[in-house]
Amino acid sequence: MKVVILAGGAGTRLSEETATRPKPMIEIGHRPILWHIMRYYAHFGLRDFVICLGYRGEYIKRYFADTLAMADDLRIDFATHTIEQLETAREDWSVTLIDTGQTTQTAGRLERVRHLLGDETFLMTYGDGVSDVDLHRLLAFHRDQGRLATVTAVHPPARFGKLVIADSLVTDFQEKPQMSEGWINGGFFVLEPGVFDHIPGDVDWAREPLESLAEHGELSAYCHDGFWQCMDTMRDKVMLNTLWDDDAAPWKVWSS
Image (cartoon, rainbow, N blue to C red):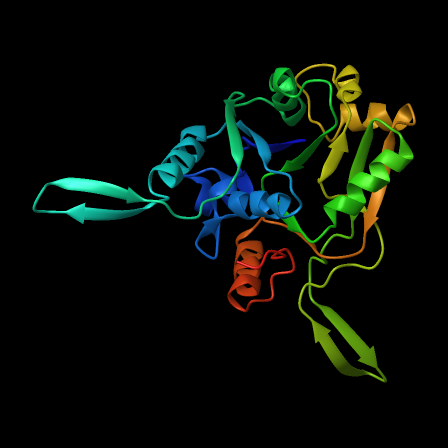
């Protein structure tokens, strides 16, 4: 089952980082957030990736090419001027990198990789968000619902810290907690090929296509009460890195 990752946007709200590299290549713990997303899917046995490139897509191509080239350990013999590659463990992923245009919108990017997806169920997400959603349960839910599309609905993080007050006394302070009310589109979609009938052209996936699917009763919501966070601002980047450095990253479900 293929996983499509939308990784072509300019990430203008993080211009401090994205002036020289695409947003999915911003690092958490010395690895691009794109790697974290892929590693998460791979934990659930989903290792066949189609990455939709756009803004500075060559940066992502170079990353994967360099990763493959430098994955093995080396033995260098200066006397004979030879280099021997030593077999080492590496990711067992298949990664297809497709240039879908510099200014193409998200649904247009998906349309441009349609020929790679065949007639099977596939997954799709954005290249800037991590979560601890159980992908096995998500897939089971999608199959049980029998609709063309399932979106993972999440509680957005609060914009500001939360004060807990009792008798005019602050009894607790929670720094940017997850909200307990309201749901938003958190990505982590499961989709059937029929969703392409709801894409009218080069449009925003979150607008016309999802609106059309909802109007036709073909959009299910898998409600996830756990962790979800996108990297939209420097504050988000710092927070995600702090979680990683403290060994408290909820999306790190793999053992090594």
